[in-house]
Image 1 (cartoon, rainbow, N blue to C red):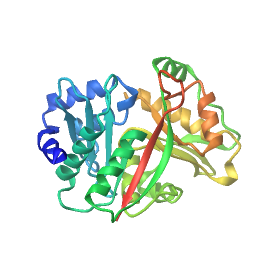
Image 2 (image 1 turned 90 degrees about the horizontal axis):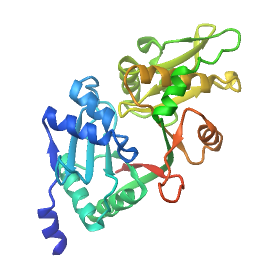
Image 3 (image 1 turned 60 degrees about the vertical axis):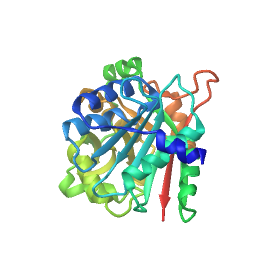
Length: 304
């Protein structure tokens, strides 16, 4: 009974005006905990990635939010959601569960829809509680990731750095979305229905990096419409030549020049890339401010 009353009183504020979008973008830009929000808000304001429109909510108000919720209603692929707690606030578990239930009702209604949830571990656990309150007929999988971002110092170092010199026969170039999007998409192990169209949109609208050999793209990386780097890939015959590092530095510089603040995630079990990212002068790993231990972001996929 208490939970029902709480759910009636706890109410998310939906952001709808340009002024309020700009306010939340400014607030979320200040914190690593809310790093998944600013670029999506910017593309919504500018209508620059229409394939991934968003709905944005805060609680309790725009002036001093405690939580921020985002629903990205992707045109081609399953929607994804993100929830974050602003620093200097504590999670009230019952309050959060109530807000998650309200959020789901407002964005999904009565429709049962597969989706991706992005959040830190405690929020992910509470999201699972809220999901099971509605129905036990769901399957989910969790991908735990380490988050890397760039400080102002990292950005200065990156922009002063020369692009790595490539081995003979290799050269930097751009991907042709109309001709090569399928080539890129086929390398992504998580690709599913609609991802080819989404990949084409990403290559058309956002920075990407490519290295070619004999005219063919052999290494590349691009950016998700939420702002994070993704799908870095080097074909097997061209590995151990530094091409993955080269496309990443190229993409970092392109992103910074376009006004973005680069960030990426690395799967916790991808030890080689994880160690390289920790050692890199371009990246800073998100760690707990008190303990210094690395924090995890979870990509939680829900399927019916």
